[in-house]
Length: 140
Image 1: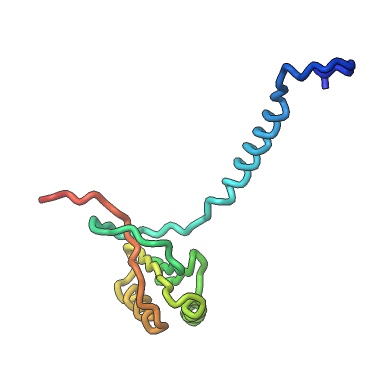
Image 2: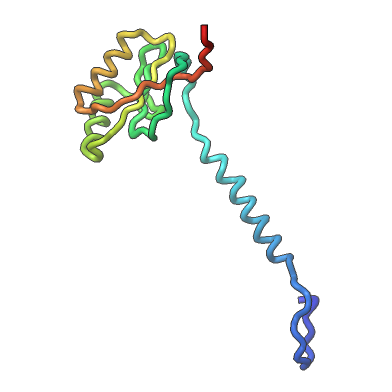
């Protein structure tokens, strides 16, 4: 320590060394900068339909998406219909109040989205929400 004296005086330290504090703050800042890049999750772009009357939903247990090509995605990962059924069953066993958030691409066939909702209901999930892209409603 540059400011410390080794004499036998009973004087207290009259200066506060803030360099260790600055070092700690810089290390914490670097840790936050590195970890924030992992928080942002990659996602598949789906062109959601617009609606003015959508409400915010509670965090869902399962996010299921139908792409324009009719492909099924569970939490962003491609799945087959039997795999989706198994995942919904497992989530239902783990949590009786499981909620499915259904997102259908704007260009997806209506029958594909209806089939997905029917599949979720067949597996015993009664609570689901349809994901939309909120827009401002213009009064006529």
